[in-house]
Length: 184
Image (cartoon, rainbow, N blue to C red; front, side, top):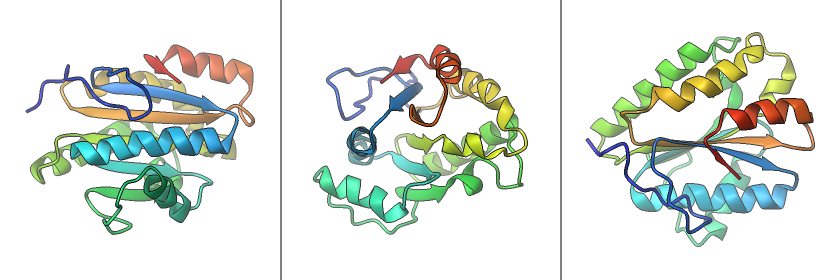
């Protein structure tokens, strides 16, 4: 197993944080989000990681375009072990409610599967707009964000939570920022 303190290229800066990386992207422009998220995912694919984009409102084909626009020859199917775009309801609340502990267990199972398939790690990038839809359990998001900081300690995983500053209030963003060791 790869050391959990390895340095990771996050794709859009010279900084190389160690994993597990839990990054918060707060953006107020779709163009900025597209550029940062595209570079982040491209870096993961180039490293040999299994990459997932969890979309709430962005069209899956647009996500693939971001990757192609970074110069990546994206020749993987729309859903594969290497790369997939997954709707937020299928990722965060497949049972119709959000449970942070169940979500962490699903993520751990995904890591195990991808490690067995030979990937050097996992990387995810999730739109958090689904929190504003009144999904049962969505009020437990801070518990989930805190769990992410400890749940993957032995695993080479990095994740980027994306919060649109145009949709979330300042108090929520402040709380979310306190739970992310890395902020963009």
